[in-house]
Amino acid sequence: MNLKLSQKQIGQRITELRKMKGLSQEDLAKSVKISRPSLAQIELGNRSVDILELQSLSMILGFSLDDFMSKDFTVSEDVEGKAEIKTNQSEERISVPILKLNKFKNVLLYILERCAGKPNVGETVLNKLLYFSDFNYYELYEEHLTGAKYRKLPYGPVPQKLDTIIMQMIEDKQIQRIKTEYYDKMQTRYIPLVKADLMELKASEKDVIDKVIEQMSDWSAAAISSYSHKDLPWEVTEEGKDISYELAFYREQPYSVRMYNENEE
Image (cartoon, rainbow, N blue to C red):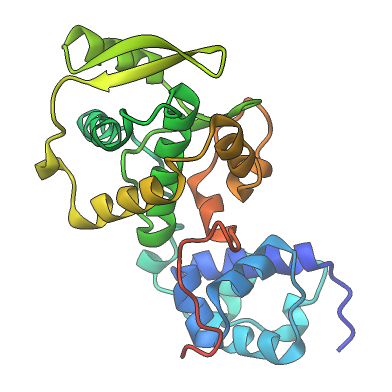
C-alpha cells in the first residue's frame, strides 16, 4: 500500500480513534503487541507504522484501511459508519490537574525532611524534585499526585502558586525560609518545622517520591536543571505555557519510569 499520509497525520488519526474507543495507550499497545513507548512515538509522529501494525490497528480500532488513508478521513464519520462504539465509551478521557493543597504541602514537607540537610537543596533543586515526583507518578499511574500545574520557565519547570503556598506554610510555622551562602552565591533554602503527615501519602506515592530523592537529591542546581530541560514534557512546551501531564507518556529512556517489554502480550 502506498502511504501518502505523513507520519504525523497517521499518528494523529490513531490517537483520535484510540480515544474514541476509550482505550489507554497501554491497552492498545498490548493488543497490537508493541511497547507503549513505540505506540507513543507513532502517535507523536516520530515513528513509522508498518502495514502489519496498521492492519492490527484497523481490526482493533474498527476502521477501513482505505478510508483511513483517505485525505478526507474524519474520526467521527468513520466511527459512526463502521465501528460499533457505545456512547459511554466515546467520551475522551480528560485529566485536568486540580491542586490538592494539603497533599502538595505534605509532599513538600516530606521532601524537605529527607533533603533539607543537604547543602545543594535550595529552591532550584526543590522545584525539580517536586516536578519529577508529580510527572513520574502521573506516567506510572495516570493519576495526579499533587495536581500542581507546572509552567515552563527559562530555568526549568516551576509549580504554579508555589510562592503563595510557601508563604502560607511559613505563616503556619510549618517551614522556615533561610538564606545561606553556597559556592559564593546566596541560596534560598527551606527548613521543615513540622513532620509530614504520612497518612496523606499512599505507599505508591511515597515510593515514587523516594525514588526521585534517591536519584536526584544530591545533584547540583545546574545538573538537575540541565536534566529537566531534556525531559520531553518541558522540552516540547512553549515557554511560559503550562506543561501537559499527558506528555509524560511520550518520554523515552532515561526519563521514562515505566518498564516496558516489546514482546509483552
